[in-house]
Image (cartoon, rainbow, N blue to C red; front, side, top):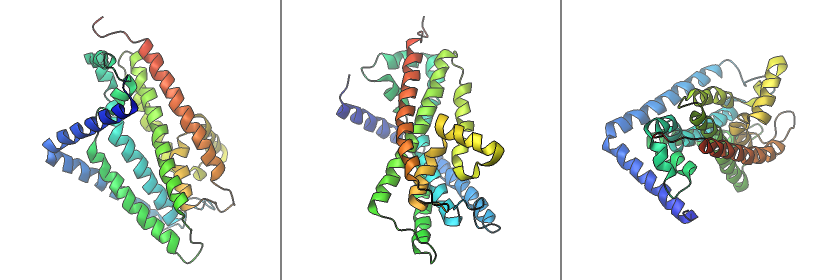
Length: 284
C-alpha cells in the first residue's frame, strides 16, 4: 500500500487532471459556476424577503438576520466542499459496478474507498464556496460591529469554526459513501444513495426550529441517530452565537460532534468494506 505522502500525491494528481478536463470546456465550467451562484442568490433573496416581515426565525431562537446569514454561509461552505470532492464520485459507484470499473479499482495498490471517493473533482462547485466566504464575511462584520450584543471573535473561535466545518463535511461524506456503497448489495440500484438528498435537507435549517410534538422527535433522531443537524449548526453557532438567548452553550454539542464525526466515519467504513466483501466481479 502507498504511504500517506503518496496518497496526497495521488489526490493532487486527481485534482490537477480534473481541472485540466474542466478547462477543456471552459464555457461549460463558467455556465455551471454562474448557475450555482445564481441559485444561491435566489435563495438569499428569498431569506431577505422573509426578514422584512420577521426579526428572527422562530421565537426566542436567537437566529436573527445576520446570525442566520452566517448559518446560510456555513451551509454553502459545507455543501460546496462535499459537492466538489465527493459527490461526483459517489454518484458514479453504480456505474462502476455496471461497467466493471470497480474491478479495475480493486486491482490498484491503493485503498479502494480513497480511490473511488476522490478520483474526480468538480471545480465549478467551488463557486458556491467563494460565495459562502463573502456572505460569511459580511455577516460576521455586522455581528461584530452592531450596537446591541456584538459578538467577540477570537482566533481560536475562527480555527474551531474551520475545524467543525470539516467535521460537517466528514459526516455528510460518511452518509453519502455509506448509502452509495449499498449499490453493491442492491445490484447497481442507487435508490438509497438518492435518499441522501432527502436526509440532508434537515441540515439546512437551525435545529431550534425543530420543536413541539412533531419537531422534537425529529430533532433527536437527526442529531443523535443520523447526525445531520450538527453538520451546519455546530460551526454556525460557534461563529454566530456560541451562547443562545436561553443561556445554553454550544460546547456540549460541539463535544458530541467529535464523537458523531468519528462514529460516522467508522460506520461508513464498515459498510463500505462489508459491501466490498460481498462484491462479485462484473465479469463473473
